[in-house]
Length: 164
Image 1 (cartoon, rainbow, N blue to C red):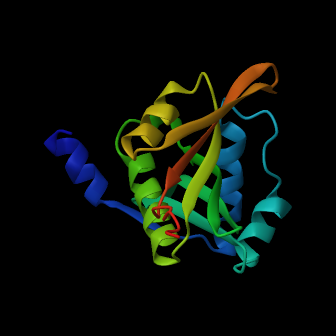
Image 2 (cartoon, rainbow, N blue to C red):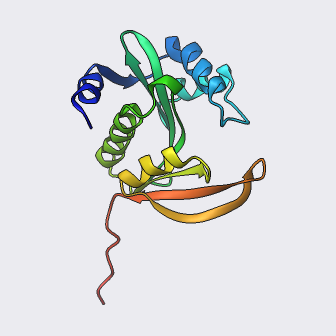
């Protein structure tokens, strides 16, 4: 990472999304070229309102929304449902900063893992997940309009063997 990228990252703020962020999140989600079944504004709003089982983050730079993540807590795990960074802001550490905050949240809640699904052709996203030590669990053949998907996970707690 060069000095310019580092300085840029320091000016990015990641915060818990609010209802006022819904239009910007929706716009980002519908501009994502890999999306086939985008989110509705009502769906995003419901996630942000439902603080019990869901979590939504938004990344801002100079007052502009440049990325977001939507996640769900289930079965003692965090399911990353969506993470998007505005196209012209990619490869600058925005996704990494969002992921770090999500992983820190999962650890603080003592969750056992973070898991997600990703298009097999989304190499930049796969490299991001691998940089956090995500592992491949299995492949979904034809999950995304004929394109394969990959289920990935990051274990956060060691499975302890029971000693008898």
